[in-house]
Image 1 (tube, rainbow, N blue to C red):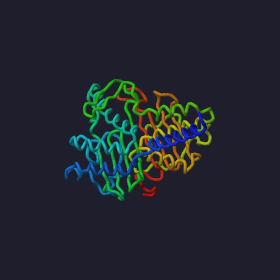
Image 2: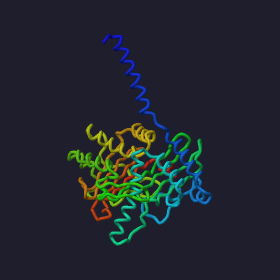
Image 3: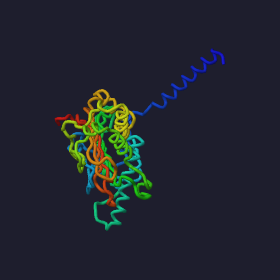
Image 4: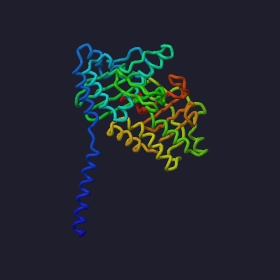
Length: 354
């Protein structure tokens, strides 16, 4: 091949690679997509439904969140929507999550039907289980240039966002949970149309990557990382509008070797990756700007599945907590995960003093 032809081919390949790379990296901005999806969902609602769904931005309900089974919640439940409203609500849910996060949310909803079946088999006592008992609430008016909030919440799921113009200015608390850790049978959720497969792990990387990291620590590192021999029963400040104000504990990022640092980064990305790429990237850039040297990893409890375990990862801009201590619906120990991403500077776009 002549040098001239080789150069031409190389230029063509470079241009093609650039175009492909641009197409691959190009993403739809999340904030405008959420605003559009919220507006379209509201347009499907009648006057009474809108009254239950729309709150002032500063309403106290905006910072009220929890993931426990509750008889009722703020907003409008999926089960009280018609088909067109459900379709629009689904688009709103998908607009604020990545494909990975959306899949988790749908799996968590489907698990309610499985828990209902297991509860029935065990005698029928327990909270109401309904995969359509998830509530959507809007705070303020979703429109370009305005600041507004979104809550999507039910048992084991709490998603909270604040949007302003073209930016998602807050995306926490972001809470996901699963019971059981590993689905023990094939199950088809007739109401939600979602299949759960035997052996499926709804919350996967958040647990397995953490075990991989903690078990890579040497004796001295593990001593630095360990904050308690026994795992706590629950994440801290559950349902509170602010994350805990305790000083970060555990092993510092700079005391990890490169392989361990890479593992920690992958674990953090597993949480950030529940949200769309632009929001996820913004979360990671904030950590980078604040300095990974200021990030700590802490562990409590067992170093293997089946016995209670807990960890937290914390830096100036974020707090991750994970706990797996409760038995699942069939009594298997440490098979019931709760995990959350919070902002120590202020969840819900609040300042720390609010």
